[in-house]
Length: 255
Image (tube, rainbow, N blue to C red; front, side, top):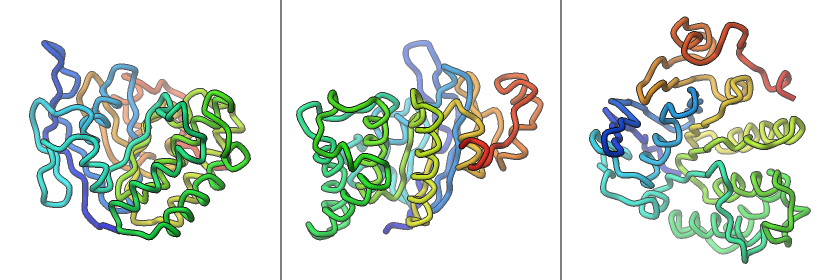
């Protein structure tokens, strides 16, 4: 497992005359769990896209360890261990849930040089941990939406990532499914303490139950960052996004 840090320094992203990101700094050291929150359109998914190589930043630096990776596309970054999931599951329609998860494990095998047996073990573990084992032989359009969402995360986990970027994994899930997701991510992080996780979510109690640190974006800029307990009480954050009654969540409360 790599111990490299993924860093974005002064990251800017422009679409024509629209500034989606303005001078954003982010650092994902091994084992860090960072929650990324903010209003719709604040640049959260754009930042994940820039970090994962889906977009090339208009300005700023992206480094993995000491290596500049601005010019690397998503495939090359994934092979370094920078893995992301999507809000809307990007599963291959013609493959079963198990086969989709195995694609992630196969990426991990290529990156880490692990054996076929280790690849299979990662696949089985991810299917079980994220509640997909009972649907393993179903096609994506044959299984419930919640299973597709879980399979998206399971595929990322099976890739043996150094950095796991999660884009709204709980969106569209029931309360029960959200609780299962929290438990699964918590267990995964416990078993893989060197993996850095960046979680984008609108459910602030869910984010703070999993992530001890937050970065808040507003209009493409970093509004606040730091320990979750402090950030959710920040006056600027409350005015811009949270309102007056948001509290830091616990795993028990969101269950």
